[in-house]
Length: 240
Image 1 (cartoon, one colour):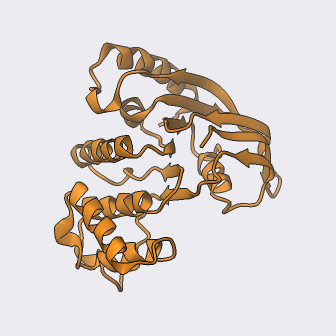
Image 2 (cartoon, one colour):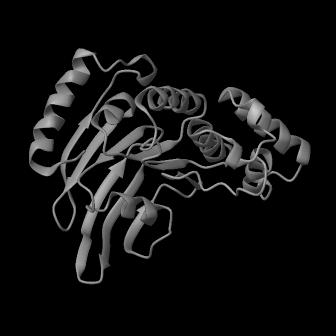
């Protein structure tokens, strides 16, 4: 496993150039947060890493596989939670008992064991996102992409799920690339924060946060310093 490195990325939509010889490096087994105004290319960058979009340039450090947590859960509504999760990992783990054990352990860790045999339509928004998190961590990968997965949730639930996500990641760390518009989300989760702006996109801000995420509070003095910097940037480019 190594850093997730993007070199000379080029991508355009019709007449709009999104990336032109763009370079960025995400530290391995760390949470790398991307902020920036709408339309700047944050989701596009994730989709390039996941090979969903064609691009020119090179992306390395994701050879061990990529998991993706989207804004919407993208679960199949006609099958149970268990079957949704089993469907994702059955090509990787051939033994049914092994798959069932892994799924049961993950659901227990996320405190949604009671949802195992329910259909997605029977779950709350928070439960759906927990299942999406379970799916992403069950699939063996070195890189986890997150595209505003907590956007539609209320603040209390959002912060609980963030802690659960970080707790699971601390057990078997992945290189995380987390796109968000929320400054507070970035402060609670990030090892490294990047802010993108301009057309084509460029990095206008990059700062590391060294404190342990599981112990962080938004009132921490070191987070307040970074928040002030981000709020200053926000006044000109509206990153949230």
